[in-house]
Amino acid sequence: MTERVAVRFAGGRGGECQLSWGQTAIWRAIQRLVPDDASLNMSWVTAIEDEGIATSVPVERVTGTVAHVMARHESLRTNVRDGRQVVAQTGVIEVHLVEAARHTAAEAAQRLRHALAAPAFDYADEWPLRVGMVRADGVVTHAVFVICHLVTDRGGLDTLVGDVLSGLAGTPSAEPPDRQPYDLALHQASPQGRRQSAKALRYWERHLRAVPRQRFAETGAPPRYTSATLSSPAGDLAVSALAGREQVSGSTVVLAAAALQLARQTGAREAVLQVIVSNRFRPGLAGSVGPASQDGLCVVEVGDDDLRTVIRRTAQASMQAYLHAQYDPEDLDKLLAEHDVDLSCSFNDRRFDAQTGPGTPAADIRAELARTTLRWEPVEQYGARYFLHVNAVPRVLDLTLFADVSVFPEHAVEAHLRGIEALLVAEALQPA
View (cartoon, rainbow, N blue to C red):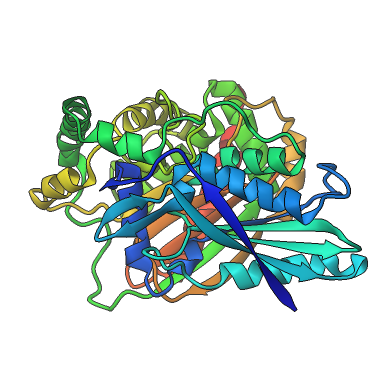
């Protein structure tokens, strides 16, 4: 039996304005996936006592936390209507309460998480947050949160989770939050914001000349998608070794290997990938819960060079991509309409890794090669012909490639993932 507890919240303001650029990017991704847009929902379960957050937590602690974060972060009380963001100042959100025995509480929490995350959100009329809790012996043992992607992105999720955990511990955040999406949208519509967008798009226009009109050999077959995930402990060790050797981030190392392998498989001398840029390095966005990520255009000269050389070029190219990844998406649409190019390849590192890694003995890397696994999952629909994700899996290089197998068939997908691993391991085993 599930009970629903009404929670009232009151924020500092309400209002309506255009979407921020980051919100627009997420909104477009959602629209491309309809009716499968629920796949973008984010969720987590907090085992309150098991994780040492607090003990004997009453229902009121959870509902108080919900009221606090709803008031604190405007994106949690934002709907999208007619393509604009509408921020409510006050409202009521329902929290689902499930009773369970102690020994079944964790299982009940996972069932509740699945039930809350499965449906797509009603973006116009439903709060973009769903909350549940499991109570056993009179105290809440688990809290369940499901977030609509319009609320935040991977860069802002840590801030939101931190605020939730502080509230559950009885010490709610008191510092003012970073920039809200409403304020960001107003800034982006200002003359200063327009200049920033124009500068970024000048970079895009210069580099669009390097983008091929056709990336893959067209077969005329309708799109058909698949996904494959390579999990490589050896690859993780190799990335750490190369990041430390070259004094770059692990993300740069993986991007370089992907760029080199993709160029080799498509017969290109330059690799062109759209990279997901968090934009959290910009003022006021480090702790913002609103979505700020946008695509950056990364063009890497590959030629006939080795991975070490490509890593160094990728470090420079990706930095330029990051610096020019905040712009008006509608203006980019107009620019792309003037260029017949193929921007169907994307890269997204979902991790938050250290800038450099420790040295790794070659024997350790070789010993881990036997643990590499490859698994496949069918995909009915996807918004890109090639999209490589680096997943946040500890001590494993976990790569998921979504591909349109009508132009990049299954054997090419496997060759790509295994080729990235082979490039990384071979380079890491070379003398420094």
